[in-house]
Length: 272
Image 1 (cartoon, helix red, strand yellow):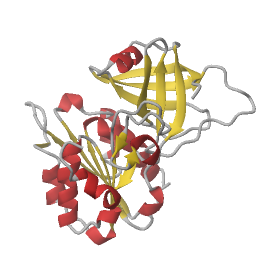
Image 2 (cartoon, rainbow, N blue to C red):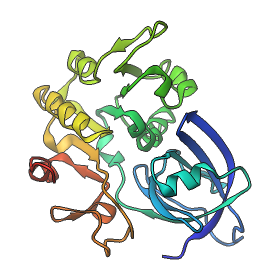
Image 3 (cartoon, one colour):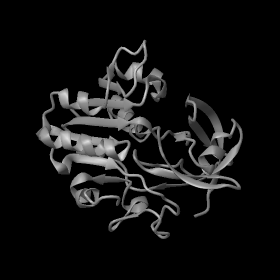
């Protein structure tokens, strides 16, 4: 429950209101190993004097112990984190939660489906695939955003497009946008998918994930091969406060990544 003090080593703006922080331990202990985490897990980032917020890892772990988090400023804590400059400090607790089941990708086609900021928790999975850490047949990325100016990691997207199958869709295009305009379910529906030999990882707005799941099921992807990252109001991160209870689950310790087969009844309850 006690945060470790980290320092902002790098700060970059993805688009107005959304930013990425690279963090390094302020006083690393020589005999202590760097934080180890699985893609899909999260940290509690503490803005001193304001509070803390649950933020997923958006980068792979590294031997130097640096942590990467992509954050949207939409509350008091995240706005305080947005004001941090390189060299300034924050508190970090973690890692917490259950991440993406990378073991389930062995010998299968991996479908990564992201909407908006949902690409951030999936970015480590993409890099795991590109670096050969996934024993998958193929990795495909379907990414939707509101508009071209709100795409995350635009330089990386250009590189990923040369290394894996990439489909990008925006809700609202402009005069220069050459790609698909509309919801991400359109290119997903049009894609040739070997459902029985695929595993899908989804993160984004809940309504997007619900519709994408229906497409995947129609294409023969088993419910047991569909995983999604859920978001609720996480406060303590260890299942004590009850803020993130969802049905019988606590998102912070039982998730945030769940198998669709296990949570299908709770997704079907209106307003839950």
